Amino acid sequence: MSDQSEFLKAIIPNTYYFDQGAFDKENELIFQKCWYYVGISDDLSEHNDFITHEIGGKSVVIQNFKGEVKAFHNVCTHRFNKIQSERSGNGPLACPYHNWNYNKDGIPFGIPLKKEFQGLDKTTLSELCLPQFNVEICGKFVFVNVSNDAPPLLDYLGESAERLLEISKMLGRKAEHHQIVNKANWKIVIENTLEGYHISSVHPNTFFKQGFNLKSGVDFEVYNDHTAMTLHLAENAEKDKKRERFHKLLKDRPFQPDGFFHMVVFPNLSIGSLFGITAYIGSIKSLAANESVFDYDLYETNLGEGQLLGEAISEVVKFSSIEFTHTTLAEDREICENVQKGIEQSRSQKGVLSSSEIRIWQFQNAYMKYINQEYLNSKSNK
Image (cartoon, rainbow, N blue to C red; front, side, top):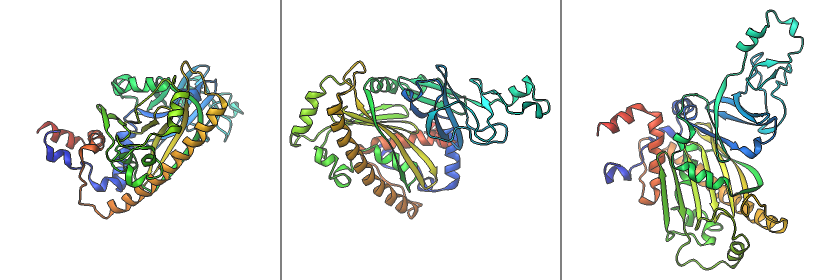
């Protein structure tokens, strides 16, 4: 940042939070250009395991072919039906319309009544292969780049890769999969996660009760386009005997942040963990200019070396964490949807940011870097 006045001002124009043109630009210049988080490798561990995603307007299937993970355009080249229609599952890469199957190179095979097609030889079948996309994995985090021209994943992640490797080692049982739809632009949803300034007023029954408030200390981590923070308990927070008991029972857990840890890998990966007891791993997806969905998996910690929690403590951890996360996200949804309405009425205004909202400033800079070359040029001329 070049000066204090620039820091205090939001960077993204308000119209970018509801304009259809901005939505179309984001699909092309951000979601298709960047490495996009799609899931955890545990869900792709067996032959024919698959997960699907919509990335920048493209349907993508990521599938395990006898241990080799590939990503393809999830649209049959015969009559353009979607091939895998479920969010995740296990099954061959076969179109349900006419049962065209595809191999690990995306080439169709086993075609019913193949002789009825004129000139459907080996060369033609290769020409009918599914477009393939780059897929790379960091720890257990799976990313896809549909433009196929992004830098190597580790270069893109930079120092944030170390955090992803650390979090990968803590993941135990999956407690639940959950989606929450927001009638709000995806950037509003992400920006809401990037600061703890709102927790006292918005989360009185969750974070505030845990001992987080406006007097909570916070540590920030910035890895170029990606950021993290650890929000600490306030100094005047009362001791929670239940929490202390959990800390003792789970003293060997691999990841032990001193408070609430949150991380965003641009553009869509959001990770949150309260003391490392559980962690949500989520993708914030843009559905329309004024609609998004937070799609996440909630994981328990393990006890080191992949050792799972005992069933009794697992049930307690799962119940309390699911309730906490659902309540928090429902409160956030109400705020985000109200912000969406307000920002649509405040087209020409720009918000202001405090030092506790520095991650919003970093996110908006990353966004504008991809979305607006003129903005990047103007920055370099200052």
